[in-house]
Every structure is written in structure tokens, then in C-alpha cells.
Amino acid sequence: MQALIGEGSTAAVYKAIDDRLGRTVAIKLLLPNVRDTTRKRFMQEANAAAQLSHPNIMAMFELEDDEERPFLVLEYVEGDPLSKYVPSSPELVVTLGRQVALALQYAHEKGFIHRDIKPANIKVTATGQIKLMDMGLALSRHTPRVTAHGMVIGTPAYLSPEQAQGQPLDARTDIYSLGIVLYEMATGRLPFTSEDIGMLLRQQVMQPPAPITQFVADFPRSLEAVILKSLEKQPARRYQSAAQLAAALDAALFGMTHQSAPSPAARPAASTSTGESARTLRVMLADDHTLLRQSLAGMLESSGNFVIVAEAGDGETALNKAMAVLPDLLLLDINMPGRSGLEILPLLRRDAPQVKVLILTGREEDAYIIRALRAGANGYLLKSSDESELLDGINRVMQGQLVLGRGVAERVVTGILVGGGGALDELETRVIQHVAAGFENEQIADALEIPITEVIEIIARLMDKLGAKDRHAAALRALQRGLIVIEDVHHLAVKA
Image (cartoon, rainbow, N blue to C red; front, side, top):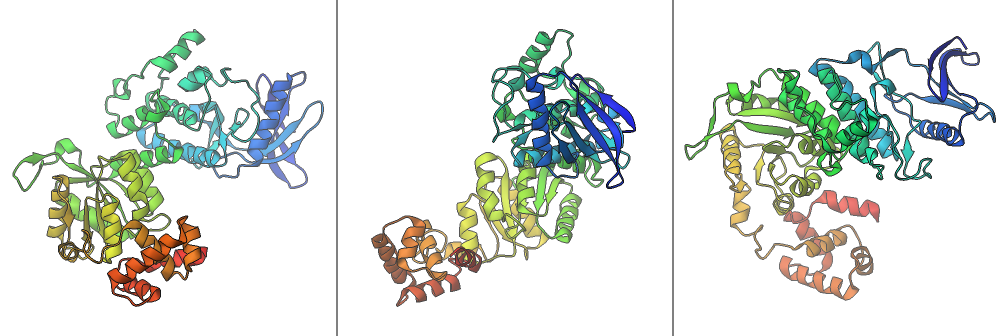
């Protein structure tokens, strides 16, 4: 051991050299004569740290379970505690805060809640990398509790309302605590303070935080809104995951640094086709082609009526960012890495019904159009649309109209999407997909959990609708007409 670098009420931390590997490490040594619960919590920290491997979480290398004084061999992190960055610029609040959020998202996905997020447990390296430390209070959903229900544990100034009341916890408690850290970084002060711990806990439960702009007049309102949402007293009103918080921070930074997007107050009001004035529209772009997003952003912003509040290149990021920033309009591609636009659309409609969604895609098959409109899309345009058609489509969507572009509207007119002879209901679609994937009738009945007699009746009905002489010809015609898509068939075939 080289030097003592920290000491608390239960453990001391030393800087040391690992002679075997020739590296600098940190040794966390449990102090003598501690309670059994403290020793159990120390072992809980070891268990948590051993299961977590993330660039923003301090790594554990080894545990020595000595009967008298167990110790952990940890990654040695050279840097300053986050308290050295209080207060910080809005840009630094976002840059550091999103790293903590991503580390928490990883821990939460592994089943751990930190429960003690505060500046002292967050280090910043010389390169600006965050390291989340001290998993001593980390609670796994899969292991017995060290503390009893109803016991308040953590640092009072950073406790969530549910922690302050000794209630059961989930990942949203860490989001609240990180919100306090972000508030402190933004203002240089804690949102709630009192020398009386009981009073402080009551503030955490009942008192709303003062607006950040009360202390920092020019603080970006978009970032203030993100931080205050994290500090909602009811967990259901906060961000529902740390990933959503990270996405919201990203979007706030995007809005602060996007040079071509002046503030709404500085922009001319948009005008609708009815001649009424309208506020500047907050638009989000979701497409995996970066150049297309850049082109769309430039075109929309040059019109003077739009501000781009967020972008995403894959479905999962698009969902998280849309839920975080709640744009007025989302321009959504269908085929993206990970989750497709069609997969996230029903979730957006359920959780953010106020967001208008205009599909902008190269897919013109009937099956895609049907699924998008059934899932609640407000419009469907092809990427071949020109600038005037796109702007007109956006305008009409925002007026509450259903917008169908050239090549799409024609299909509606011919009845394909509105129950014409060739339209398939959901169960018929699933059955014919399975037929196309090579499933026999009994296998389809098992997969869809319906009687085999119903499968036979549906296939007969499909043959009649599609004018096919057998089940295989019906599947082929459904593919040819775009009533089902080959990607779904391939997916089923792989599962089979």
C-alpha cells in the first residue's frame, strides 16, 4: 500500500501497487469491529461490482474474504470528485450527467439500483470520463435485502421521496438522485437544505424545487425542464429509465448547440394553409441515413418554420428521445437498425399520443402502409416526395388531417387499405405469414394458440379472397400484392 486516499465510518481506501500485474489499484479495507449488517453490505458491494463491467463504472478486480478484515481490490481512478464541478456550464452538466445516466442504465439492466447517487460517489478523470463508484448500497432485485423495509438509507440531501419514506424502490429512485446532482451542478446549490434531517426528508417528499432560472437567469429552459422532470415527486412522472434521461440530456444539448436553430422567439411564425399563424414546430428526425437527416434538417430549418429538437439513427434511440423531448412532429423511417419504426410506433401512440408521427420511407408495399396506419401514423409519405409535398404534408398533419403521399393515396382509393376484397384482418395476416414460412396447419394452430379447425377455415377464406387454388398459391399472392412482407416471413422461418 502506498497511501491512504479516503476513510469513512466503515472502510478505508488505499492506493496500492499490484506486484503481480504491475498496476496501480485501490484497496478498500473494511474497518475492524463493524456491525454484521455493515459486513454484509460490504459483501453486497463486492457482489454488485463483480457483475458490472462498464466504462463509466469503477471495476472490481478481486475480493479477499478475510474473516477479520475483508477487502476489495478495485480499479484506481485518478481524478476529482464531481463536487469539484459544482457549479458547471450547461454543456458540462449535460456531458457529465449523460455519462452517469448511461452507467445507471447499464446497472439497472443488470438488476441493480445504486441508491446513493451523489457527487462524492462520482469521479471525473482528466479526460472527462465519469466513473461511478461505491456500490455499497446497490440493491439487487434478485438477492435478499440487507436493510429492512421502512428503513431510510442513503445520503439525506440526495434521497428520493420514496427513499425518504422507506418505501420499496425501483430504478427511478436513482433518476431522482441524479436529478439532484444535475440541479446542484447547474445552480451551485442543493434544491433542498436543512440542518434538521426530519425537515430535509419532508422537503424531499413534499416541496417542489425552485426553478433553476431563479438562480441562473440565462440557463437554457430546455435543460431546466429535463432536470426538473427528473425531480418529480411521483416516480411515474419522472423519466421511466435512465436511458430516457440520457436521451433528454442529448436532446437539450442538441438544442443548445444547433446553430441554425434560433430560439422560437427569434423565428417568424409559421403560417398554415388556412392563413392562421402557428408557433414554430418542434420536429424530431428518425432515420438511419445521416446524410438524409442532415438534408431534411437543412431544408426544414431554412423554411423558417421549424426547429429540429432531436435526431436518431435507430429505433431504440428514436423511442427514447421522442419520449424524452416530446416533439410536435416525428418524421419516422420504417427500416432502421434494431427496432423498426413500425415496432416503436404503437409504443409512441400509447405513451405519447400528442406527438404527431409522419412516416417518411422508401417502402411502398401495401403491408407496410397498412401496418403503419393501423398503428396510428398520422401520415405516410415516400422519400421520393419533393420538398413542396413534404412541407404540405407536415402542414396538413399538424392540422389533424391524414396525409397519404403519391403512390399511397391510390391504394386507399382502390380499397386495399379500407376493407376491399383483398384486405386481410390481423389473424388472416398472421396465418398466411406462417403458411409462407412453411408451417403446416397443426404448427400454425400451436403457434397462434387457436383450434386447427379455425386455421383450416381461415386458409379456405384466404384462398377465396386471393383467388388461389391452394394454400401455397395464396401465400405467394399475398407476397406479390404486398399484403405480407418477406422480412416477417423470414423471421418466422428462422424461429421455426
